Image (cartoon, helix red, strand yellow):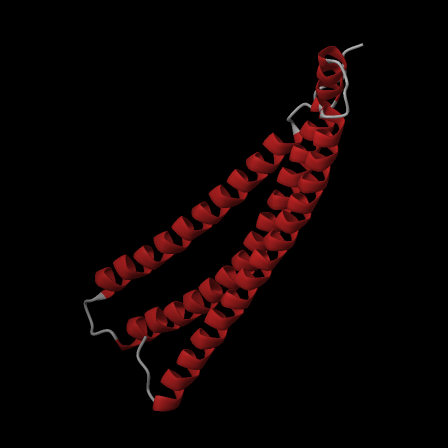
Amino acid sequence: MVFTTPDQFIAMQSANVAVAFSLAQQTFHCFEALTRLNLQAAKVTLAESEQAWQQAISGKTPVELFVQQAGNARPVAEKMLSYNSHVLDIAKNAQAEFMKVFEDRCAQSNARMQTVVDDLARHAPAGSEVAVTVFKSAVSSAGAAYDAMRKATAQAIAMAQAGQSAIPVPTRAK
């Protein structure tokens, strides 16, 4: 993009810095949520491990201990699925925030590019219509490629979420 005044350049750089700090803040919030989730999981795991050891050394027979451990398989699987679901939720929310910023920046960039293309077309010398048409086509193709990438990313996230919800939880044997 061609800047006609230093103020335009400064405004664009200020906007870029604001976006960078916004993304950094969102990344920090994502890591903060993951850290809280991991700390909670570690506390629960520690408490449950202590309880399991207490039961193991309480003098039960090996058969009783085996039956008790087998009975713990379902709750452990459910906790793992819950943890994975929370991680996916955090990732999905972070991705949504990043996509909002990315789409906004792309829309702004596309608008600026369209302005440049229109200015180029208006000020192009006679006989350069073919070159202007090719340039407009390239800009249009880049927009279509971005849209395809955005749709593919959304599909990949939807498939990951569907895969997470499709995992069966083990049932207790009777």
